[in-house]
Image (cartoon, rainbow, N blue to C red; front, side, top):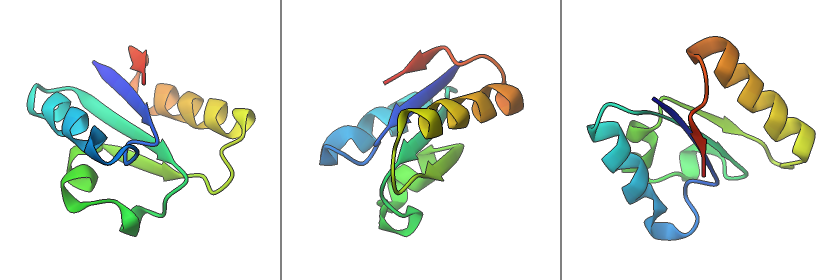
Length: 79
């Protein structure tokens, strides 16, 4: 199963969803406007891949989701 989280570091407690999904064998991907070094370590460890988009326009997010699909297979959910 592949899940994409948009801005997985906001609100602050959302990292718990990512860590719980990973512990159940889900591939968790993140797209956000925070630099990777600003993510808490537990969140970075839970994400299979994180793409930093300083300006999260529709086309940028769509293209990133297409990259995830091409690389890892069908996306089952976007949160």
